[in-house]
Length: 186
Ligand SMILES: [Zn+2]
Image (spheres, rainbow, N blue to C red):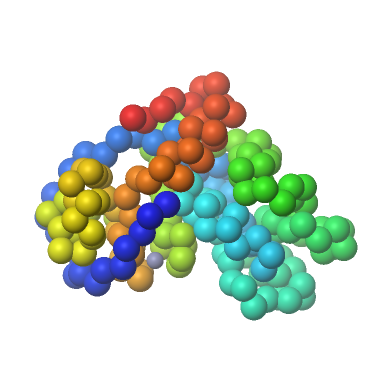
């Protein structure tokens, strides 16, 4: 997905309506599922955040730290490491494929998302995104993006601005196709 960095103060102005997305948060018992992701799966972590999953990821963690976080925070560990996946006392999903689309599909199948309002997070810092109007981001996105997009979100944590892109659309349609109850928000 295309992204652009900006730094704006949080606006209290009314926000415009946006298309309804495919999914809400997946549930783990009575609470939304949360993940901690192995260092080798950075792309998967960023896409899970975009889909709205609370995803803890950093690229400098060893196995001991990952297990500690999974236990302490009650997060499901996503890894491609068989030995790490065999650790006791934590919830683990062993990711089978090296392909991003298949990895996302596996996670969504394991933790299916009911249709409803999506709450996407920043792919870089995991903060819930806020809706931003075209006027609010007008000076912070390229001209061609302003001309071709009406819906934006921005991260109150790091200031990044997001808008739908071709890669995003491809992933979203693929995920929608996994769930017959999901609807295309466009
Ligand atoms: Zn951010």
